[in-house]
Amino acid sequence: MLCPPAILQTPKKITTSQNDNEIKGIQVAIIKDVCEFLDSFAPTRLAEEWDNVGLLVGDPAGTAHQVMTCLTVTPESAAEAIAQGADLIISHHPLPFRPLKRLTTDSTASRLLWNLIRAGVSIYSPHTGFDSAKEGINQSLCERLEMQKIVPLIPIQDDPQGLGAGRIGKLDSPQSLEKFLKCVKSSFGLPGIQIVGQLDHQVDKIAVACGSGGSFLDKARRAQCDTFVTGEATFHTCLEAEANQISLVLLGHYTSERFAVEALANRLASEFSEANVWASDKESDPLSWV
Ligand SMILES: [Zn+2]
Image 1 (cartoon, rainbow, N blue to C red):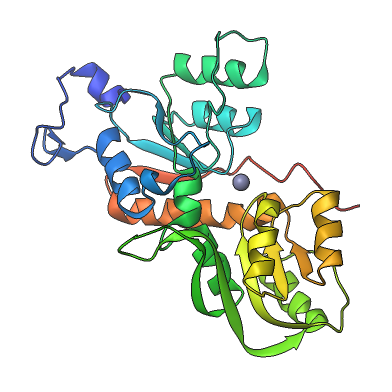
Image 2: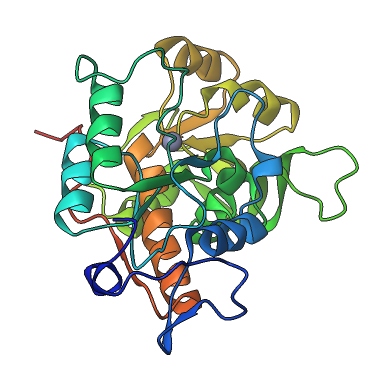
């Protein structure tokens, strides 16, 4: 909601020009401040050209008492946000992503937007800006895989902080793909994992790209990586990996990114102690193992 019930009873003009965003002695988080904080560590300038990032729905001057992070705005996560009285959803995947010509209930995206806007819920998406950030999803993935000497797979030209898309790095010491997969499955709690490659192949130099990172395979090959870890890839990308003898490890799109929105909720909660921040409890991986 744009205004919490307590504020509705005693309406006051809320502006970010108030030094400490204080209303009747109570600290109030403002959406604009949350956006600026997000941009400080997941800069929208790092986002891919095709992406749609930043505050996509809402009023920057609105209050952010109840903030929910999620991987994707789905019927389940949107219903949760509305039921919990969220003012702001921080969704890794953008909504809207593609341009919309109408906001009716006829398509899933516009129906979700219609419902959220009517409930006063704003939406911010960091997406590929967060993927590529210094402490972003790809960096966190590499750290979870216990990689060393981590650098961007595609560095941004002339970036003073050495940032870029994807990551490459090495294991402490080379190990078999079989042993590596055992660690990956246990680290992410996976009952199974899709791979391309031979279990006795050595894993040493690894490329990482969260989500649908198949388009980075050629960069991984040029960087002489023996293994490429991503969320999902097409059949033809799998064939290409096989033809180039690169082991391909598919974590699942959801698994490769969802952990990061949970960490993001913790980070926001410690920065904005006056707000209630949580990671969506209702969204889940649409794919399952049977
Ligand atoms: Zn994704």
